[in-house]
Image (cartoon, rainbow over the protein chains, first blue to last red):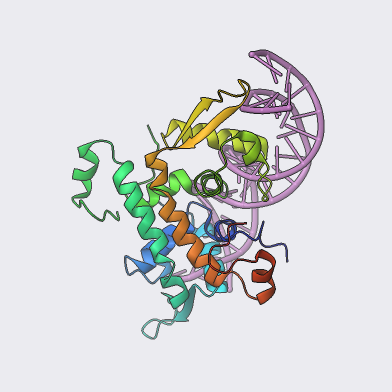
Length: 121
Length: 121
DNA sequence: CCGCATCCGTTACGATACTG
DNA sequence: CAGTATCGTAACGGATGCGG
């Protein structure tokens, strides 16, 4: 039961999302409409498959994602975001806003994406 | 120059803040008014001193914090948040909001803090 | 004292190969 | 297709040292 470092909600949030990959998965599912393991594994940041599998398991366990079988292809699992997960998207949005403003030093970076306001990938 | 994993602002933000400690330092300085190494080292989550030192150096290097000598005590350094750093606080706020809602399963947790809306520590 | 730096055992991460 | 197993590497974390 030694799950959280303190009673601080920031610390507890970071106990869950304080890594380099979890929020990228949430971005792909919550903002980019991905729903399968394969689609997630194909993210441009090249997540390792074991890392992806572990994070998905944790997010499902936390009730942030659901995992169901595809009706089309029985071998495929569908990951979907829950209401609890949707309410996490503002965190990604505020991070996006800050990063878009401060982490693109030259115009080339913006040109490469082709999008000015919301650069997801 | 292999600093960022992709052009995505979420990924770039996580390249900087995607760990369990950096945002806690920002919380302490930006929301709790701390300003010295000693105050930061005393956070309830018990950050290791080497970790603290490395994160502070990075944050100063990124222009998110400034480091100056105290005029009172020449041995003490004062860490202060910049405008760039202040604009990061909404990320902490949105994370706080989510965590406050979802990571306190029983009433005891809230009672222990004594605060309902913004539980920082 | 204050602010780290070093050392070092433990843990988490991450790339690749492999399996049901 | 959706993961596991393996294993080398990096990060964490506690203790301690040390210059200023």
